[in-house]
Image (cartoon, rainbow, N blue to C red; front, side, top):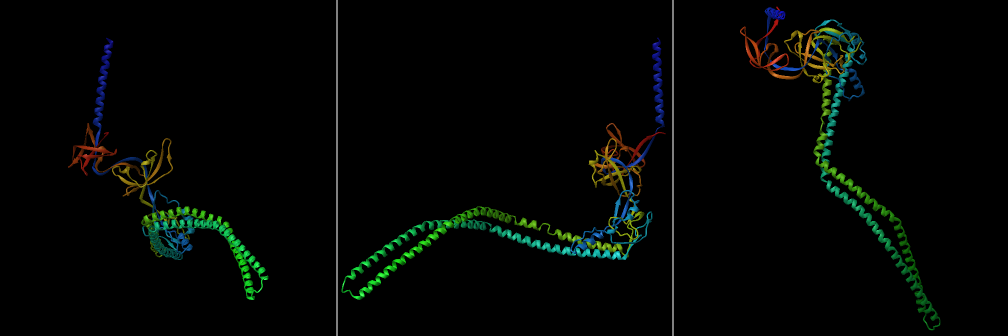
Length: 558
């Protein structure tokens, strides 16, 4: 019984509680207020990417003297024909991030002023001074202006001489290339004939050496036979002479015993005997002489034989190597002949480079001189920018150089944002790429910027490794102030030329999407077809047009 009463009591309490909660939330809903805000349908590019936040920093502008006169003076002194490499432009406006103006003392030290030429006579401005474009900055001494002018004039003359030399070299190169082309053609046409002639000459040398050996062999073989014949002839002559002499003696012996022989017969016999004896002696002497000459010749031939063999061996060796050299020369001649035009084109390739570089150097030297004359005018340098001077780089007695800025201005138009990008996302960032920027103060406006720097060293926290990326804000930045918070998006995907609207303006019911479009002051609920969304805005494929006005509704407490 008691259990039943307890259950009933609990049920009553639950019903009362639920009723109270309903009444409470109903009351709260009646107290909520719906707030609406109009937004415009846009046409353009819809992007998505890596988004990081940072703060805006106003930059500075440096006004510089950008010709290194000391280098030109050194080049002019070294050689009158050497080209000078000065940078163009007299005053350079350098955009740098951050307020860098607090280093006046460092600039005034002008550590590299010794290398300058233009001497400061008087300074007209000071740090913190607000100037307009064209105001006087400082005055230079006349002596230093004249010296600088002479250096720049010398640079022009040097550049002119360099150009003349480059033109002469170009002409010489053309002549050489043409000669080489014609030589390759002629040599190629005669290559086969020259090759055959070389082979023939080498073979002739071998043949001549072999012929000399063959001749020596024949002569060496023939001489002994000749000597033998001469020896036989000598012996025969000796015998003949002995026989005649014996006959004469016999006749004399017979004649002594004879009577009545006339006196004239005695005289004739006497004459005949003497002639026979002389003839035999002369023949023997001549044969001996011939034999001696042949023996000497034979000895000389034998001594020279090894030399003849060496000459033949040398001729054969030279023939082998000569054939290889001749073939190589032939092949090279044929190759040069077949590629004569290409070889000529290679020789002519870039033939104008030196002349063009010399022309550019001359134009630059003339430009430097002209800009210098505009720069110095009456010896007074004027401001190239309007703004507050943060630092002055020179004092009286200093000399201008290309390293130290003449003055540094605050530049409200140079705005940069530095953000920290994690190591997982840094690969999506490149120098020069365009980014989207939304400042917290102007959430409905999309600014654009360019990545100008990525640090090499990491900026680590306890859990992640990241790198600082610097972005230069482009366009109208007149509403941006120092320290404003900004979200920078590095685009990884982009849809171009689409209609889009804020995500907050789109309401979803089931599978359909709606917006409240304002026409003639009345809001009308219309269906739309959506597409790609970057998390902030969504593509509208159907239902809206560029310039339409829609409502963004949000509930706030009363």
